[in-house]
Length: 579
Image (cartoon, rainbow, N blue to C red; front, side):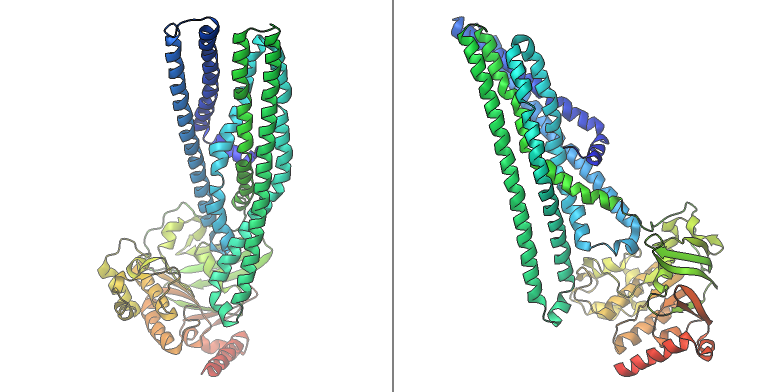
């Protein structure tokens, strides 16, 4: 039961794999050597009536072989776990790099709980496959063949019995494996579903409480947990059944060798030394096959996890690309879109179709339109989350796709609708924009963003820990911390994506003041619905179905009485209803 892709991963560590294989084979050779010298000692003492002193050198040799075998087995175990650790580390790095390369646009469509389970628990399930199952598989092939080569010239009858009985163990293992494979896959899928559902419930706990549906979710989680328990018990049942079957086969085979050797010894067909040597080798012959059976369940676990791991690595999407051309620090940024097209899911969902516009350095462009018009896609293109399927984006006359992504992103400050705050202090979260910034620079940025006062009211000021997602920080405060990041970054291009959405009036006023200071002297793209934010822009562009429907100033677009005027009327109606 070998998985082609997992074997390819092991081959990448070929030298370590070769050493582990050689050590395993060396342990088998030493076992044969021990059996031979032990046979000589027993034969000389009990049949040859030799004194203990005569065989003392052989006894010391046996002790040395036992010690050497113990050292080799220990070294094999250490290197096997090292092999597994190296492969797991490489796979995790590939998974994380692949997820980061796909970017937030593609990964937003994947269940977060399932992703976490694959990268953590899934990769960890490969440990036993590489540290135990794969080395044992190599020993199950090498050691029995070597023992057959030793036994064959001494006792052809026993060699025939070994050749006939040995294949029964892997045959039964394969038959039981077919039975266990579906159960293992079902167990892994159930664990993925449980992880994804549990994380989803945690994220939406407030909504569930609001609608009185939390108890219903408890029942669902209980049901899925019971399903996982049941599938796990089914897998363990098969694992124990396989262990029992393989042990029984190995025991019967060893007994068969012992009976035939004993009878032939009784009739004088073999000598005592030959018979004892063969009897000592018989358990060593079947041992690798028995041990392979005991590690079979670990191999199945690894194979089941590998399915999802390599499916994730094969996931296609708009990859975040980077050019090679360096981009020096720009004082001002001018943008030009030339017939830009973009889509999602390999063209299944068109997003932008032939968008062209020019934004001079220092100008502010407001982008409005109904949901799904392509506003956020515009931001994703500029942030390198997406690549255009056609057309070009120019930055100060340079083609964006040819520029080094890290150099370009240093020129862009992004303030999203829901900024994420990571586990850490307030100062650490603001320093994401510039990790080397001093506390004085952080304080200056928060004062400009209007965040300093509320930060100083926190229990430990700038050292106050904030949890994942900003626990203990309100929406308006979180937005002002995001603006402080933008001030600290001091980028010439600012992108605002619904930065004031969902805030109360007081927070909106404070945010508008901070944004006015942030946007002064910078090129800005403002994605918003609030008229007070949009009307102050130098240009307003209305997107509809991925195309530019209207463009102009606030007054010009109102005079056209088109889509923009309807959006303004709808926004004003919402504000009146809210008041």
